[in-house]
Image (tube, rainbow, N blue to C red; front, side, top):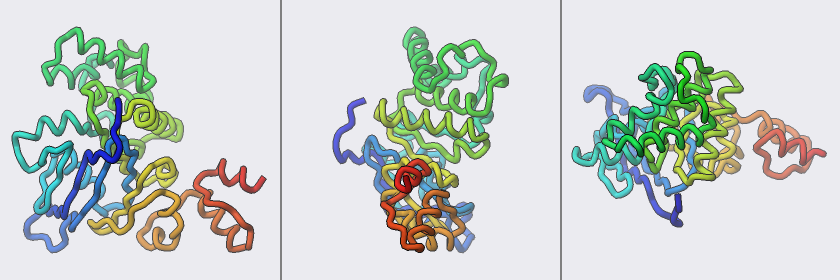
Length: 278
């Protein structure tokens, strides 16, 4: 996919969302953000911060109570735009079992394109291509229930990829996975972003997943309270801990060593820390 420069794919302007008209505190309040085509964006925040609500708004699973969201030039509030937006923005949830609908992998991946009315020959090509892109080529005839958690999540991602979206929104996609499964899924979404030009919006509470993002949005009590590159976000460790967020171990160790007058560059990962100390 060829990505233009500074192309705004998603614009969120003054968005508010209330799950209940009578509740005093909205789930989202005056949220503004912009996501450009080709971005790898991470959204972090503690439980109840509004991350998942925002994710559902981007895929038109919810509509703003106030404000507007524009996806690839399409207003989510206009009902006739709903399916066009969902073809452009694919959604991957926390539990892959909730997205796997068929008894064999290839049928599961084909489910989305079939609903779009894609011809059979093209569906076949899309299924094989999508499975190859997520590192699951050769698993077409496998039963999903026999796969590991990481493999299931990659099949779920393949099912979205087969619909050829411009953007993937992943709502805590590694929360239910072991470390190996998390590694597999993260490598997959980084590949899709870097090699295939697919815009990624990854919602997570694992701080180690934040380090490879182009842009980070920090949410608290329904608002975006900070935004920037990972290295800038992690400079204020105390601010993150005040809202019950952790920081990567390497970032915390580096901060401790700087307090001991050891000069270090900006550090995000263990490898960067080791190389700097050596």
